[in-house]
Length: 74
Image 1 (tube, rainbow, N blue to C red):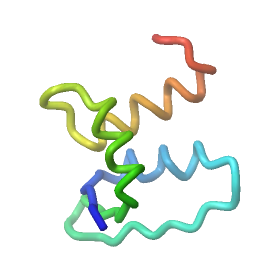
Image 2: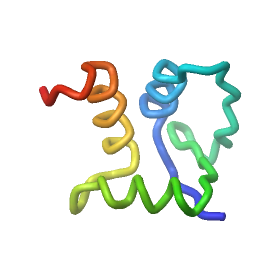
Image 3: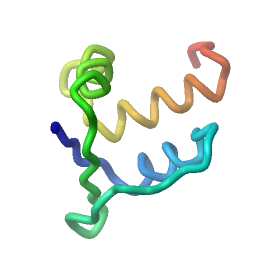
Image 4: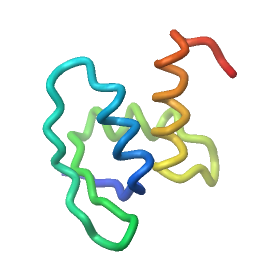
């Protein structure tokens, strides 16, 4: 099962965007780093949307902002 490392801002963005009860499964791995396990399909879908050199945290923050805006680009 693949995993990604995200910062706390991205972890909170996921929690705030959740439409169902959210169970935080992120494991702390550093002062501002959390390891999140994903199934392969989710990992692949996120990786397809990630810009070159974009961190996983920046990707998640960008996608959750896009979700909040109803899909309108900022």
